[in-house]
Length: 406
Ligand SMILES: [Zn+2]
Image 1 (cartoon, rainbow, N blue to C red):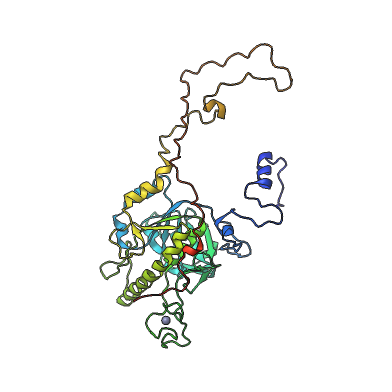
Image 2: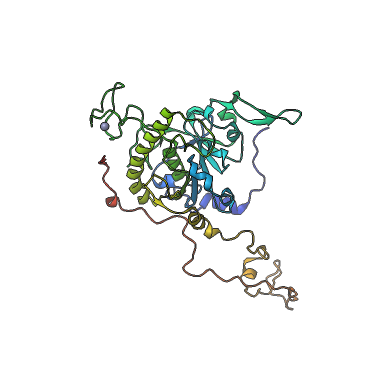
């Protein structure tokens, strides 16, 4: 079937398409169309499996709040129903989908580690490194046989990530540079195993000390959480509430879903948490300069780079501008604007004559329940602006050279 053009396009939409407020004048750079372009970047960040075209997701959630759900056991104590309230947008990390299936999920590691049911679910938007598009999934689904008996699948599937619905690819980098993090053309997920935490040294051989600071034990460290922050920023979110970010793994406290972790893996995770503490503290002033606010909703979390806030307070903050959509008034919404504002209607004219009618039109019968005039919003509006104000002058930013104290 050939692609076809519509016969009668909506005229108003056509005008807006050609003259919309974000349409730049000829030969002028586009400003303000999305956060990516505001930073002078026309670089594609989100890809389809074919990679030839990219998904224009940048800035699509502009100014909104997101709840980022990690794997820490503190998430067990969260009332999941409240994460279903209107206005709550959620992104899970790795297999946190086991406890809660949100709007999006993000991974960086091999897809065989993550629930196949997440990949097959069109309701969850999956952010995956583009390298994983052709990776086969591990089938861990609990399905039913022909008699309705449960069957626990446990085998390598023939389905690859790129065949699944609602999958978005992104491109990674492996060197943390806090002053670049929000602006660079790929998405950081920590340091490569030959790059030192000091930010200056890169070793040539495994076992060598850092050529810059001389230490041996501060190489590498990668985490999907780093990528999650950048992806949320690119999507346009400007407040991120952290759930299940405990930074405190032990044999007794691992995840809010069942999983084995041997001692070496637990030590490795705790070592990564220490590096994340350093990186996130370095990133915070750059986040704040862009009005990108991160709040930790686990009051007992060992991550102390961000301010803390109880979950209930975060929920209120994230959703109060939505109000109560279940009980809000819809009666009369389809009336025209003048009627809704309670303005008397002008006498009706015959659209085919230029002379006013000699007899006034018959008044419309008074409805049995007259619509109550809608009072205007108080001024200043209680609604927060969708996008915060302009950037902080660069002089207010800390210098790019980061000093780390240990
Ligand atoms: Zn070093």
